Length: 334
Image (tube, rainbow, N blue to C red):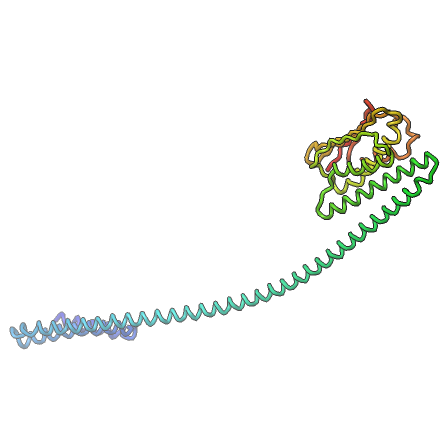
């Protein structure tokens, strides 16, 4: 009685959800139905054949087990096949999506590459324009430097030619002073041109060249000793070079003109050192007579006032002291 009831319930349940089963699950359902039918067959046989059914039942059981195994195997195989089909479908969908993404990415890469090409062409054009502009500016600077150099050289030559024909002592002194200042400007212009070409203005070289030239003007016999204590590494700032050159020219000029009259051993000492990374100390000393702008300001027209004004333009400080001769001390920011 239990077997027919079980078989009826199983068939009813399978019938109800049959449409929801996939092919693999239906093979499993076939196995369940076969088990039920086998059990029903054994039950009916035992009713009619009694003890003889005991010999037939194992055969039905073995056949049923074999059939169920085959159905279950077929169902599992079908399930695996469906999984494989589903996997292949998912892989195909993934590949399609990846190809679509690759297409989008390649398109974006092409667009970005084109933008970069346009940007590079624009930058190359700007670079060319800047190079052309820099070339023009460099040409103009060189032309301006040559014109300034030529004009200063012309003034220097004209004044030098006029010097021998000037007989008045005062006029000759004024003319020599102007020649010295122009020479200082020429030297500054030369040094600044080298500075623009990557060479710093060496204070030691600058002082030496200017001192040698002014000594040729005022001390033709070379009687004055010029001592320098300037480290080779000290450099002049380009914005201070002209003012410093004019100060130095004025100091040498005043010394040569007024300090060493009838002096047995004239000497000028020039010292410089860096007080810090941004501060330079420069000391100019002579051992001559102390007749100078401090004692007789009306005798000199451009001495101390010019030096003070140039020092102020450099944001520096100046002190003057008298011991043996005169000593000028300058503190200049660099």
